Length: 77
Figure 1 (tube, rainbow, N blue to C red):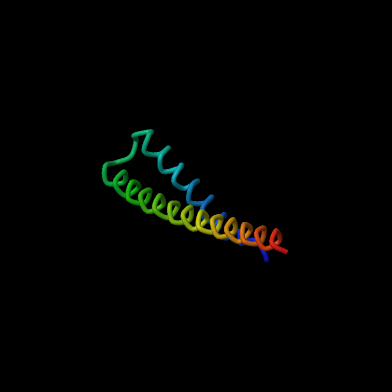
Figure 2 (figure 1 turned 45 degrees about the vertical axis):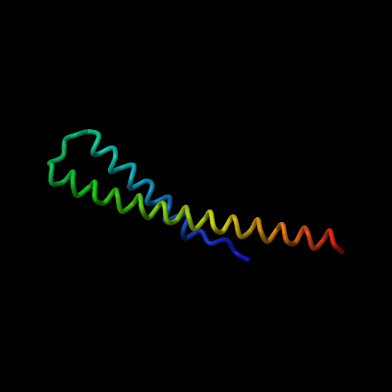
């Protein structure tokens, strides 16, 4: 069973992009139109991060459940 790092890399990339947007917006030297575009992109990145985190949480819960079942089976043997 290999570890899928695609989502981890995607998450890290999205977070870095989101941080760059926040830095740019905090400087306040962008036009209103550009700021709105950056904000919209930031919202999309935030949603993507939330989705990836939810998927990771579900995987952890599944793995913990499987581990608990295996522990119970081993204890019954």
